[in-house]
Length: 458
Image: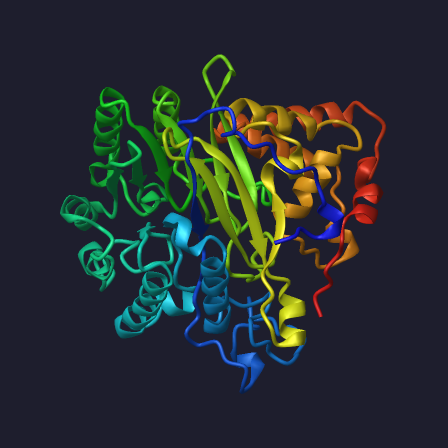
């Protein structure tokens, strides 16, 4: 599919052309579906998902494919599945489904409602990709995500038994985590239950996931396997909400980051969701050398949160089968306003990673260098990143600008994953700003507004 004109770029380099043993293949990443079984285009909108925080939002005709103040209706979920199937559908190795399949209204409902919603999503993905494995992980809104829920890990694992072998089911039933080896590629998928680190559990090692994880990583290192770490929530701060409390308990965050550093020689990819934004993180060694990275895909759900809304997105990765090395990805999105106005879901290529940012490879060092460009005056790379962050959605001209503290929040979140370091990064930036002449907007703020295509919410 041809990219939109404003983002036309030189074609990405063919990383495999010089290596006869390289066999590029593809996998999809879909996250934060937030399927809302109660979404309806009929009835009183004040009783639907438009009511947030006790405040009535302006009434309007509900859209078939959803609303920026709502979670995903079934029509949106189905349209995404069709779009994924239409692009490399027969060449997909697997699908990463990184949690929050259900909306808060669905997950907070009866167990029968949760079962029905989870069955629908599982059935849709299994029929969309009948010859490929889907690797699901638990999000914080999913059944079994918190202690004491009616649906246990075992109950949820029962729905996903078609994708998970016996050993994987065993650990999933215990703690909601598992690993699967891709024997043809010597690539191991490690699916983490990051809900264990978000505050609902206590102890040094909730449900023994840390000890299990290190044993799997050590075995993979000995067997010369490469590894993908997959989870719902990543450690670190939310770049859109710098004052929000840490996603993980800091003690768990530090321990997980330590493992990411220790086994950076075999961890060749880390994929997360949760933030509903398109962003990335660089993991550094103790000596501040870039050693690993995390990529966060934007949500399918367009729902407005305290950090803002986004257009729906799904992501297609290209990787080298002989090593697991990620070569590139293509981000697809749905212009929700356009889809509702024309009663047609036209999923479109938003951008291609390497072409968009002019990268020659997808590595910790290349992403480190990209992040450093964010601090340059009038940074075109940051302007592009900021547009992609909300999947081409800005609710007003004011929201399309980004002052100096906003820029620094993004930079610090990307480059300082440990929360204490993130706060220090922000404080150092604030101190530096206070010693310079005050400026309400950074120099590229107006430039950013003129560059980006603004999607008003109607």
